[in-house]
Length: 394
Picture 1 (cartoon, rainbow, N blue to C red):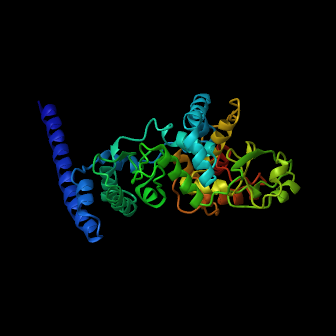
Picture 2 (cartoon, rainbow, N blue to C red):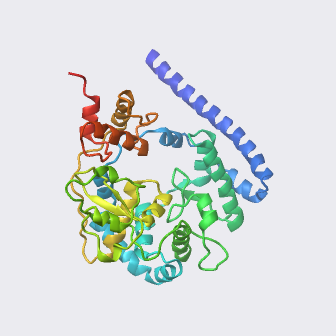
């Protein structure tokens, strides 16, 4: 009986806590309503956006949860690009060839690149998210790591509703506030959305002219260089200085060729800017990347994502599926990466405040450590470096 009473008490406390959370949340929503009106957002748009918002505590867990593993390059690519995806992407190129041709001519962004984004973002529109966007943004701005960011996006959602007179249905999307076939945040939709079909509204959920034109407009305004590559696989010569392989270390392609980089086609040698990256370290594949790669990273700040867009777009141009990622050891876990950063700091190689993610400062610290050990200076946070730095002293 005592056990039953304890369980009942826990359930009652949980219900009361949830009720308190919802009450506090709705009080916060009332304040947001007044703030939105003070920003001169139309009252009808404010009411439509906020009248039915609910607190979604699971989103707070998602926002706060640190990933157990930092995904390795090969695992990332293999999960997102396979023969099925390439076949479906080619079918989409056929199905929407008319609108894609017009968009490519207007914005000079290749149709294969647009379809690659489409495939990676929502499986070609197969899943765009089903969470009410207002509730997601309100929850994350009420109690999230990036509260101010999400509050701005909540106001921007109201402006989208106001501008588009979007009062017929609730906008839905991902838990993090992105929506539509290409997963735009409300601010992105406001800034880059295009009414390509001239029906008086920007519809990134149902209008394919609007969907593709909005994505192409984003990339164009971000600095897309027409007719230029994104990335290409190259081979590095024996004795190559791996410290030169860095995301933002650009040189003329001709200079890389003089340094012995192999596999650059003749029509790329005159290009003025390229960098070399090693997503699996010095003993994995090497990619030469170009300014269009940086444009993709404005869309998503992930090297793995940008390379996946490039690789998928290349596969969509080819007659046969040829992508084969070389095997790679599992990536370090979040906890291991944190421990690696602590070890680097403890040994005098400043990697910044540990956060469990291998950013540029961590890679630079690894390179400095590798230099002291006469190791290839690729900055790659792999198992070997982890073991060297965290092994107990003999």
